Length: 284
Image (cartoon, rainbow, N blue to C red):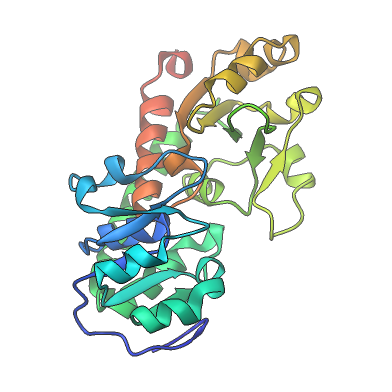
């Protein structure tokens, strides 16, 4: 099979697949393929507990930037799958361990990656079923949200642990691709300063916190980000935001709001239903 890093002979029914990051792990889980191992993300929380009841059975390979190659050898995989940007550095080494495939990934074109993994693993029919069910859910939620004229713009901001400025996710990002499908959009001022498709975010200093203002603000918190988030909340500039004064700031989990695929996208839809359809602040 040809892929972005070369040509690989892929087994027909791989039983011991290693995913080289949690988004690939998520895709495999969505296709009922339990990976034997995956690394953990460097900053966000792990999605393991969120998306599988068998999280303890998925071995940890350390952090995604430096997967433990010795452990990969010990696990005797029959297929290693990751995204090109994460595989390229170790592609030759990994290929000597097991058939290794690198797949292109664009944040706002995450469905393409899902389709590609389906082709590689012989799960194309299941991929189409997942996408059909997802699009049906999008259609229903979009109709419900269209009845709420006071909902127009949404900011998706990520807050890190102390020492790193927060950011907003732009039109090139994974979460904005999801909310766009249900008819929501980010503020125009965010669009105007997001012109490079290679960057899915824009950092925001406290002095430019006004860039986060919108009808709705989802604050996606990393692990240990509460202190940093509280710092911004205590600011008088934060208190002046219309979205704060209207009590429409909602904290969510960055593990699936910032990066992801079909399971994360579905979890974002869960949160949209929870906060935008059932919240009294909006419905009153």
